[in-house]
Length: 185
Image 1: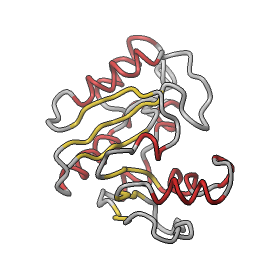
Image 2: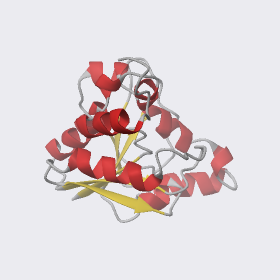
Image 3: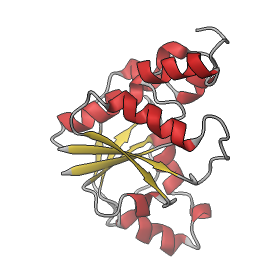
Image 4: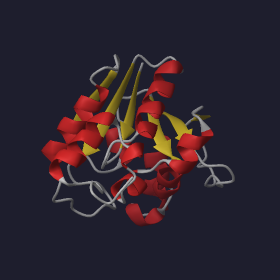
């Protein structure tokens, strides 16, 4: 069984690795961290380049059997997840998937959601789930340490929390002055 875990991983964090590990612990044989060349709802990132981010991400998971990295041209999560057995998403992305704005109409949205494999959902305490789509995918809450879900984010890492980054990302940040390097940790 294979799960896909889409994201910008800008930068990869210790929480990203924990989610990949938790997915493997559920019995998935492989977890593919998928970076979209043109991520939906995200602005362009000039530095680090996508090739640099992919290299850092690959280095971050090099010691994790069963975890791989892939670049895609796909933008919608339904397209990224096609053919996978599981889709790892956070609650914010799960709510975004349910927003009609990303689709032509509500019927297109519902069809995209129904096409998803089992959703491996990560949420913060008290976050409401969106209303389910009839005949939508099975949703499984991915067990991870609450401190990782509550306190770790790429946004915080970019703001200078180098301790939240993977060791490979931290080394890259310090060597190239990106992702908050020099702002303090």
